[in-house]
Image (tube, rainbow, N blue to C red):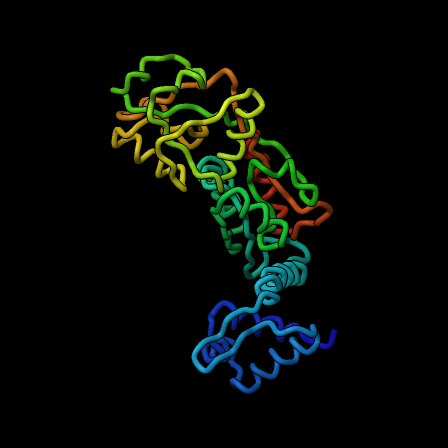
Length: 296
């Protein structure tokens, strides 16, 4: 492979800034020198990474697949060079995590706070994305590890469980079902049910679990995000099927949460990592702090 580290940095800069002019300025290179480095990298790989026009620069399909791998390589290289000895002495660094949105709220803040107190110069990037997208980000190397509930089914990923998160009903306190201590799925018949769309990992878990008991979910409203379901509940449009961690805390003035049984449907939230991959020292430190914080 006939390319240098600065060639990779040049490619990432163009990909991030979307402009040869801005990338050249950021790297303190002339535009011709930057262009030569990109061409050298493409020639070495045997594939175009960027589509160039007079007004626009875009990643090719190969470039879109390659850029997260380059980012991870550069981050690990920086960690290896500057992290020899005490990681706290490093001038900087970056750890990327892919987490489902509910995990961002419940699992990460305490761990990130503790990590930042110990390693104040290391930045943390949180990709708060859906379950399927999160698994792909970890598998591609765009994130060092993730917090997800679908990882146990992916052969290329390792999955370490953290907690069980059952699905419940969220309804307004003035709803006819609000007085119930628990509900069976069949008791939702006749009520307007709010759920997330079929592209959601949560919906996949629900549909698969109900199918095993010969049931289907009959819904009136479908949303993309869990927060949208809560918004419709607060507006009095119906009841929402949600993971417990996505519902307001007990004592909320408007919304009440009711356990769902017969069958009980739950999701297992855990940490996902690429199978066989060794975490960079900074990522390994955050990973260890996350596990310690949650176990405490």
